[in-house]
Image (cartoon, rainbow, N blue to C red):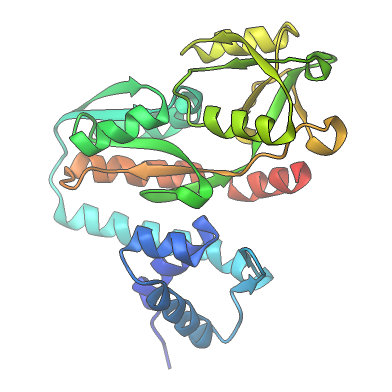
Length: 296
């Protein structure tokens, strides 16, 4: 006898898998933590296997959960595509997309795919620091935005969680200098207070070498050996070196969540763009998890 999977349960499972936390997933889904837990348990009962390994501080996917996550994403994607194809008219109008400076390159594939699928939508890009973009979403100045948060404080829909890492030029000894020379992309950057707080906790004095909204200029400063910086692991430019706390004595940094933020009133183009972002950023999930494990 054929049996049908409950898509609501699958959406809850994917939200928990992406965020690594039932608490964070409950906020994203506008559900209680107990309801999220019950839905995951119901799905595990239906599939007759454990999807998560429950550890003290976090949830990790079991081997079965890793396998099911790939199929679950495909199922949700196909469901959403069918719904859009059967119910929607061609999208038109303007779409204002917010993105932090360091995620512009990561967002490019989603923008290209969206533009090809919806040629009548005019996209304009708003680049700013995450705190500014969060405010822009709240006030309706952008229609959809990627925003970076400390993972434990994530708002919106978590599409990826990544390590924040120390970065140096290859062969540079800048990390050994005191005060520690830092190059930050922007003084309003979401990473700044976390990085400076971690250095203060460790008693490491620091000085600012360069601050600019231009990520390429920051990379050039680091590549020249004048300073070190911090980036999400997937955004580290080629030719630069990741520094580990174990090898350098630099403080460990918390993971950050890359989140999709949408205003209370969401236009159809923004919903569709968000779908492209989810798909684009989930395509390399297995590779990224292996990369994160090597850094950890």
